[in-house]
Length: 474
Ligand SMILES: Cc1cc2nc3c(=O)[nH]c(=O)nc-3n(C[C@H](O)[C@H](O)[C@H](O)COP(=O)(O)OP(=O)(O)OC[C@H]3O[C@@H](n4cnc5c(N)ncnc54)[C@H](O)[C@@H]3O)c2cc1C
Image (cartoon, rainbow, N blue to C red; front, side, top):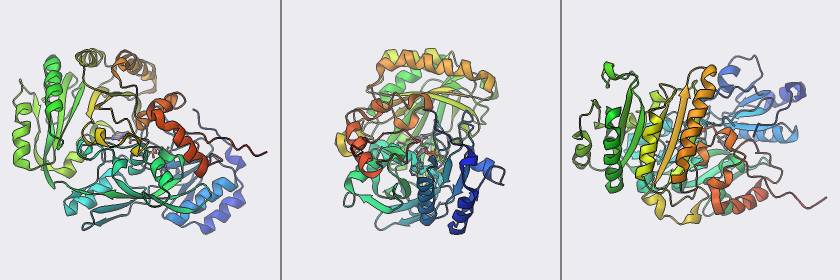
């Protein structure tokens, strides 16, 4: 779906100046200092220019922004961390609410709740919760936004213990399409709460998330071990049996890619295919050291940084591999298991990578995620044990075609191993029109009902959109 656009000249300058008098944050027009930085998202394939950016510093700004977009019929987009591959946080000619100034985090360590404003990145929350030896269930890369991640489901190192990120949210505060501040939890607006836990930005602008916190770290056993590409078949076989047997406190991620110039990998291997396992054990550290020993002792590793470390460092260990500003294109499926044929295909396509930054990644799900009731939230997909992510990443536009073609070919060849489901948060823009049903399965119709109740005019439509049922009134 290409976001609809309006011309910036359609914006009434007097109305913008009037909004400015009521706005505590900053309103940015093209050419203003900060405009270019704010409009830029993680994926450099996305290059869009909103007519107006509203950088919100509080809930009142969000209410003013939503009312302004609705009253002036301006295409509204919402940017959390700006990390979504599809880039729907920003639209040409639209009004973008940039939530990034709203980064407050309050931790109630007795009640084990972390209250985080919607502009936080994952690292902002971890930093505050880890002071108390607590953590929320968040994702693997610290500069991802909490809002997009949580509203689409969310998974990370703690998922096998506790389920989706959205399974571990107690309440969400949001501004609805009519400009009201609402709270959604099991006790208040329960239908909305259900929809928000996977239904993305369809129902309003989230301003705060209340997360369940769990004791984690501050010291854990984590890091990575890497082997040369020739050992990939044996490494993936070892990964398959270790991941299947691993206790829930141990999350194992497998990566096939060309070796980056990282100090822990020998120079002579840089640019060559490697197989790596990233591990994180959040139980007692002595126990973790025993559990990861078979990984460290397997074959002939070419690099090993799997050791005691802080949970904070674990949460950012993959950051450098996914910098903002590269070109990205992903294909993804949920997997019910790791079949031998799938692992062979992972290796086959890893040998055909078209860029030094691309890779094939297997993330673990399973555990608690599988045990929750299927209809707990639309994130659902409770039959998923792993996520396959074919991640193409490159520097220059002239290489777009080759890299996109590589990812598509790998995915086309591997999707037969899928549960049939896919992660809403990993959909590229071209998939937004045809894979939303795959992501939600049987929950789709209920999502339409929630959408019809809370956003009947589809104000929030530049997203993985769930159109409301049209009104039958003339
Ligand atoms: C490098 C990288 C690593 C990732 N790792 C993981 C991972 O480990 N686990 C995981 O589950 N996912 C992961 N993801 C996917 C991630 O969950 C999604 O990209 C998510 O959408 C990012 O959220 P964001 O706020 O940064 O995105 P944005 O691009 O800012 O927002 C995405 C969409 O979310 C909606 N949205 C954002 N903020 C709000 C708000 N306040 N209220 C209502 N709607 C809003 C809007 O529709 C917006 O278009 C990763 C993505 C990247 C790029």
